[in-house]
Length: 459
Image 1 (spheres, one colour):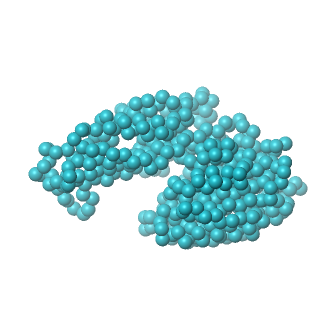
Image 2 (tube, one colour; image 1 turned 135 degrees about the vertical axis):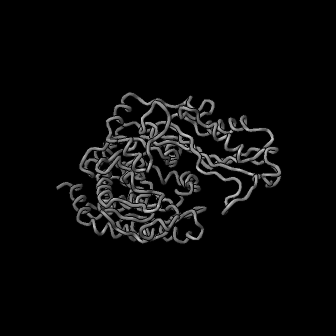
Image 3 (cartoon, helix red, strand yellow; image 1 turned 60 degrees about the vertical axis):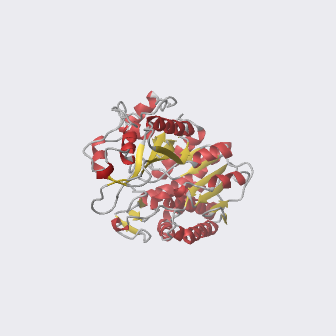
């Protein structure tokens, strides 16, 4: 029996123990955005560091200007590739709490899944790697690669201090490849390697009109209404074909290859089922593209929030002095986030009436990512996924953004493998978030196999 076979057998035999550990981790309310949970975030980092040490990995809890980072590593042995495993222990807020079937920080098992905030995003997926490293150490003495774990506590609030930390610790974080498990399988029983992520531009627009709120009967029709102005501006952001109506927005979009379109067209996906699962009668989007193509490889522009006028109970006949909107744009290769942000601002300034004031705030820019499907590391990851899940993965992109991928490329000069274990219906960021127990187990096996496969990078 090979060393990997022994490690996998150990993972199989300790499946219940792994579940108990994850449930303990999920009890810690590490909500990074809320100051009242700062101590919980620290406690979560300390707990993870302790579990890594218990599994034979040297680990420390490193301070930042915000929530701490768990930095851990196995003993570095020359001649072996070094793999940097990134994840995050912080979680989203739980509201609205009344929509949870069971309390969000009291993990519960229902129908083969573990329900709790952070179950899939990202504690469960991080835990798979922690357990895989421990299995290698217990069975074989150490993993066949040098491992570095970087587990942060601010991913859900924009990773404000991560870039500074990575740049300051660049030498300690030198690696041959990074691995992130914060993505999904394509569907139950259909594991996936993610080779592309969309980037993000997040803007806020503020319109200011009169010096104070006005009576809509005494002033309506004679003064600019910031809410009306904002609505008219936002209505210009798309044309009738669902395309984003900003100058030069599509100039740098990398076209899908015929091979990609053929590969994605063969995936088991139904527009009707997708719409039905969302409670919609039918779907919408940019003309000329399939739903998968729109989600994975076409840029978008969406209003994420609107604030204007009176929001209380009943009626108040008022023209509010201010109105604002939050707008996100998901970008695809090779769009430049800064260029798109500038185009957004300029277009709305040009379209805005001159008797109101328009201002902007930028809340996040991240570049899109595309990793070659045929790279040696990607092929090795596919082999590991087949070992872990029992079938070959498909190759997919995802519509979301993981800014740390670009940070690792620019600062550490390494590519990132996106090997995720979640399911599309895990309700991340929503009430009743879950993580499938079979996915947890298969993901742990995949992580263990991945370390063995990636050892071949230098052979």
